[in-house]
Structure formats: structure tokens, C-alpha cells
Length: 174
Image (cartoon, rainbow, N blue to C red):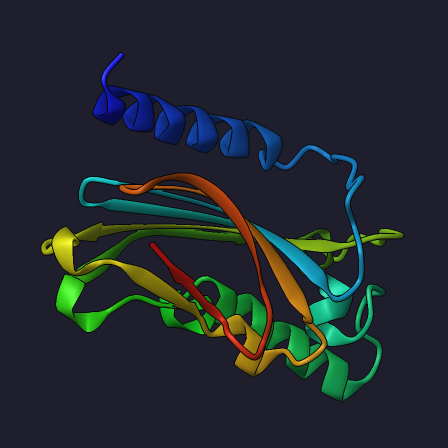
């Protein structure tokens, strides 16, 4: 299998697995740790796929349904913002990337009580100048200081890798 075929297959598998897992069915969060989120990144040709899973406590400071007007406002802002590309990530302008799809889900958005609530976000971009795409900045750290780290598993034109980002250096480079 060629390198490009492998990466394309990985993108399809990652997207299919995410869609199946996030289809609305309840799923266990074995790695759920406050202050720590996860990101799966696939860059294949002109397509960028990002799949986030972040504990709601790391974004809102709590995992219960909002009670106060301030909590309700913060959750509404998160729900609207998470489905917008620049809320979580900043891609280089030179790559001319356009958001193709965005989905943000949480049991809390549906008014469901849960012992451990996460925000699951899937973003997909198409870039007209993918050669200029050599890094992605994570804006989520600036907006949510309770998020202390983000474990990133990635497939990029440079190969497979894993790293942990922190607020001090919130940039994935390849």
C-alpha cells in the first residue's frame, strides 16, 4: 500500500470510527481526566480532520447541568463557539483553508445529566494551498484556562506521531 493510500485509509477509518462512536449513543470515557483533552488529527492532501474530546469541567469548570445565569450563558457560548472553526483552532491563512463541516456534541447540550460529560467536536477543512499547512494553533487554551493539556495523535504528511500540547506552546508542528 502506498503512503498516500495508507493515509487516505487512515482518514476514512478515523472519520468512520468517530462518527460511529459519536452517533448519540452513550459511550464510556475511560481516559476522562479533568484538565486534559484529546485530539486526533489527520492531514491528507488538501483535507484536515480534527476530532476533539475534552471534559466539560475543563471548559466550564463543572460537569453538571448549568444552574446559574452565568453558567447557562457560558454553556450557550461554548455550544455556539465549538461549532465555529476559529474557536478551537487557527490554521495558517496562507493555506487558504475553508471549513467543510463542524459538529459539536455533549450530553449537557441535550440537557442530560451525566457523571462525566465531555465535549466532542469534529472539524473538517479543505485547503486550497495545502503546502502552506505546516502547523495548527490550538486557540482553545486561550479561551479555557482550566484546560491544561491536550494529547494529540496525528497523521500528517511527515508521518504518524503523538505529542502533548500545553498552554505555553499550543502549536502542532510538522
